[in-house]
Length: 322
Image (cartoon, rainbow, N blue to C red; front, top):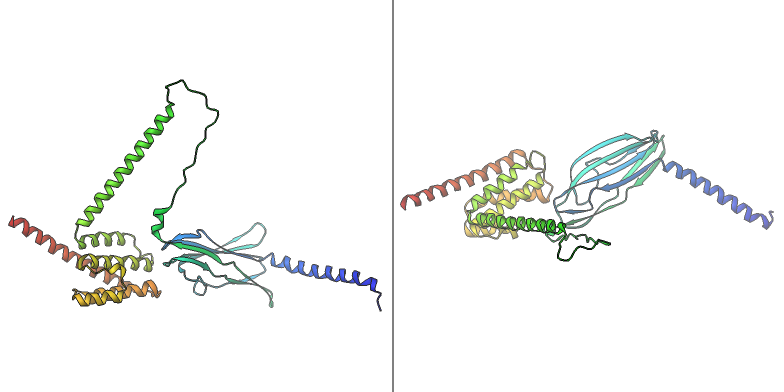
């Protein structure tokens, strides 16, 4: 039987052996690293952000990671993705998966952890998870309330000027202030003029301008269907609200359909169908048909052009009577 004086020595040796084993396993995991990041953690609703997952591993390892269809991005929608691999000076391989994602909800969200495996040999494998990424989504109207702090300039040890003399730089500052104030006043007057002019124009004219601006963005060609149908449905809702005095911008599609039926609004079935189809794309992640999208655009443009033609004919008759 061992003497009690040897027990501390044996315990120290066992602890040292356990430390060496842990150190060896740590050096293996150092060859395999994962991380997740975004280019912006505070965005406005509808913004597109870049979500990157970086994996560093040794050439002898094989990586198993989720693909575009299986990766969990929470409430965010994946618009497109890209994959890139680089060889690092240390000899390791860098794998970067980039996902362009967007969201149409407000609040604070998390991109969930992604589990990635590194397999070496037949049975030896290591699994690591990325850390969750927090993102705050705010309303576009908050842009108007952002305050910019002006830096203060403190001048010390300036030479004294003769009495009654004003430094020349103050004249420059005054001129710059006058120019800035003049530009602000002109912009304000121009925006007010455009707003009054737009308010005086009939609903179909405002809808035509808004639709032309939307089509210039080429959302369907870029496969950004959710962004397209969000704006397209808002144009239709605004048109119905201005023409038939139904508060569509604050109502659901079912409420709009019921209100149009009660007022016996012309084409109410077609409008309800377009808005219901847009809701499927916006909220149910439905993949729209390109032909159906083109038919909706053609139908709405034709309707607006016919209304514009009748308006111009009526205006011409009124001129002739005068």
